[in-house]
Image (cartoon, rainbow, N blue to C red):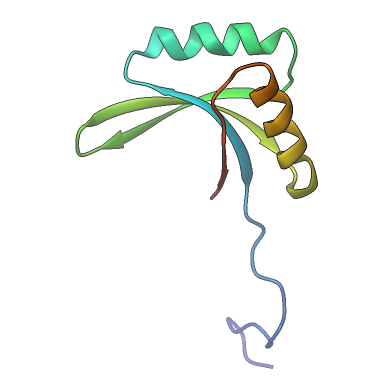
Length: 87
């Protein structure tokens, strides 16, 4: 057995699935949305990402692969712009 090599066809590392509900350049705006979502959803997070054009604060909810689409549809039905992100 060779260490550090995966057997053909073996699953790779699990990819995190997120439903992103917003990205803001102003941190307080991200936290305002988080507080609003916290009333109806669990696991809402704000994460900071730095890009060439500046810092952004992403509002996301972690989901499993099966539930991500349902969660995105529910949020979209409530008027939120959503994207499903795998990273």
